[in-house]
Image (cartoon, rainbow, N blue to C red):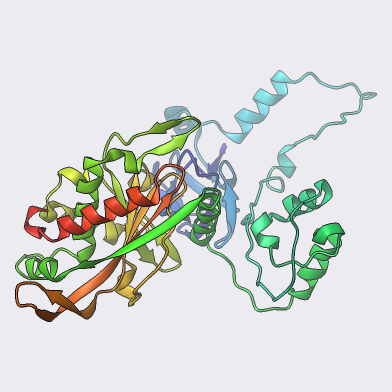
Length: 411
């Protein structure tokens, strides 16, 4: 019977690989067209690999826990000639015949100096992609490398290492340069240290933060009183989270001054065309940032429903690729962890990130009663790309957000 491969599909325009987390088929089992047979995890979500046609599972090549590149063969189906013709799928036999027809037959005296692929070696040549970044523990040391030689760069590329990964290595070369020998010695030194496998999401966060820090980032903060927000929240059903009040005030402030959310491309500052803002959501092994659309035009009630739906899907790893794209800024409420200050880092494609710290009861002077009264105060913190926004502009933005939070009914 004809054979059809089960391939790792293109799961998004920026996704090159995915990790198999569950296999729902066994050899000999019958599957239908478009049936989800393998569950895979990308950097931000879990997705399903489906079959192209009806058939019987012949062989499974994929293994749970392994990462495969887009286009890799995960298994094979046996299908009927009628099913292959009905669905228009290309079988391995048809592909082999097509290759044979296109390539001239070499004479016995000729030697092929390029790679030859035959059907028997097809399985062995399927790429299994290991994660490209491996975190290294950081021992105490003196100065490291400022210059990486071509030889060192080539060795790092072979091992999937970045410059940040070798910052812990003490260099013995000229001017403190890290040599290949230094790197090998360091890796041997830590080879028996406890370690754990970094998940695709953890690697995605690491990559995003590295790219973010290629820009000059700065952070400013100011206190904000939350008592009026808390009083308004108590009167609502369902009750919006504090994050949503801050999100709404942030969107309104940016709508008044869109330049604060612009991003620099060459000699131009590109301004936002919509106020789509992401919200950082803590999940098991990292952070995902689903994006809420047109926040400046939504009511708190609408945001409450949309936010609850997004958070639920984020924690179940059911976000679509479009759910995390197109944001112009992010809000993160790390106050839920009891933190009273922090320095959030914006995503590489965003200029701003606004953080809300934990509320703390403090004595605040009241001009009405001419005495100190207890009030709930929290820090609003914004980190920004200093190429686009200056400290004064960031301060004015925080001031406007704080003012809007004093009139929560208007949010």
